Amino acid sequence: MEKHLLVAVGDEYQTSQSLRFVHQFFTARPDLKLTLFYVVPRRPDWRLDPINLEANPEAIVHIEQDKAAHGLPAMEKAKEWLFSMGFAKEQVRVKFSQGKLGTVKEIIKESEEGLYDAAVLGRRGLSWFEEMVTDSVSHRILWEQLTFPIWICRNPQRERKNVLVCVDGSEECMRVADHVGFMLRNEPGHDITLLHVCSDDRCIDAEMIFGRAMSEIKANDIADDRISIKVLTSPNPAKSILHEAEARRYAAVAIGRTSHRPSTLKHIFASTSLKILRGIEGAALWLCK
Image: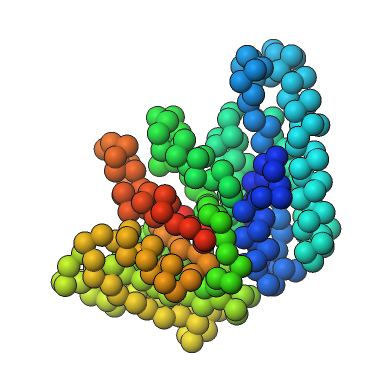
């Protein structure tokens, strides 16, 4: 089954961690469709508000100049690199955004309207997400409107493989389990480990934690011998997850985000997810709501 990824690309395509991760992670490339997405950034020296572009022709001139000077060359080079890495021309398309909503919101808008299987962010992914969790408007978008999986790639290392799926029995974790199963169904080189971190020795029923998650994964035709489970006990789940990801050299860590709106910014991502986001290195973080 075809998988369609939205891959955010910036000016410096050659350092694009999103492109590198996709190339390194997937081997069944004929099943993959990529849309390279370039958002023309708002330049401080424009001193223009491009929100109402129809009423601001000067903004359009600046945007088109920036697109021609930076966006088009970057996208052409990114396509050429992908073609040299074995992707067929019909698998790759490019799309530009005038950036009138800002980078974060343009990515969200395109991801939702395009019904992509995931949005992939690279080098600047962390700064974009920190913008989302520190800005009140983006904060509301993150918790109420983000309806697609998003991957943040942090210096992906070529030799890593497999996916660590963090589960706690929640609906969000069921969705992330299904997402991982779907993305790995034709990737036999990657196995899946379901991980639950208990805060003390009194872990809740493992069957409840792992049973349905395993069913979601198996529904994607993932063989039993590709799935394992692991339970850790720690007062600091984020630290344990990061340690496990590094020790076992996972290519990706997948985690569900709560659908409940936090009472303060301090509790965004239920703290654990945000700590993993900030601490992960050499791998990608897959987030599902």
